[in-house]
Length: 289
Length: 168
Image 1 (cartoon, one colour):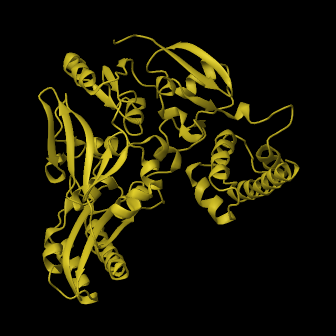
Image 2 (image 1 turned 90 degrees about the vertical axis):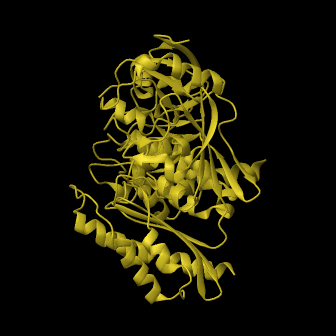
Image 3 (image 1 turned 180 degrees about the horizontal axis):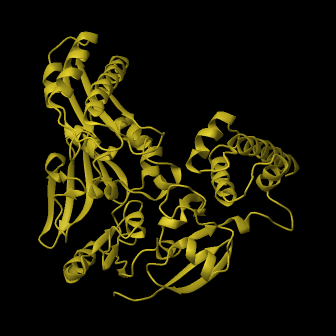
């Protein structure tokens, strides 16, 4: 229950950090952000990196700022900062609501947005938020920086588009003008959710103008519920539409059952939580106007 | 740059320390073994139970899923730092008076988390305390008395703060 030995560096620049990942490739290095996912894995010896590159001293990786219609968040920004940020509450309230569901305060005081996304737990909230928002993720590597759309970033359970010598540096979330909701089922508050739903809805009069939905716990990564989105856009914003969309969203799912919930239960939960998230997002969109 | 040991300097309960640590040294082991402060307990060792909770620059963290090197340059507060001038902290007093502990194993973590809860909100309702303390597990299930102790300590701390304000 103690981590295996490893070598360690806490560089002060991003170039240095990327250089260390390249230089120590044979040691299967990992990036250390807040450590709230990686260190438990190392304590269990499920992860045995030979080298850790700690980002805590790298300047410029933390912070929240508005760039026009984009909310820009540094990868090393702590969850608790997101939770308390008035800027996040105004620009991407879906993110603030989702962060409140992640573990408990002591974990959120250390855990970072970039760490959670790069860890890519299929049950985690933040990949679903990034997906629903059509976020762009910035990565720095030996060849420079590149932007990765959230939909291409998530590859599988604990697997992302990041190369071993790339570092996630920034998350860019487009501001959504409308209603939002993050609804999830977990057996105990703050445990990983069995199924979670991120919903964004924009109204056009009494009709739904835009909708974005992402679901966790029903596939190897968080996924967009595109069939449900199609059922919503252009339809009247009432209970029948929501019920139909929730059914459409749950119908095509093929989750794998495990000891937490069977496949049937996950589909049923997806339908229920799609409906709950949509109801809440629509009522908030109404209040926005 | 890669080193087998790292030099860290940090403050623990107001006391500055400089130490050589292996990078894999967990903060909780550093506090207990290297600094001889066994007040912080080790429970689950994967960030779930909260008995290892300490404050890092005033914010609660799980010291079993934090490397000591990550606390380089930080101010750490542990349960050993709560009492002052031979007197207990109001939280310690109330945990004792209201029986906010049975076996006591979760108590150091509960106390440190309670410090943060009251720093964030000096006048919490029992419901707010119950919800906030959910971060820490008590296997004796003594949550009712823990909640009562935190609420009682909050009242005392507010009264002390008000008296100080009136005197100045």
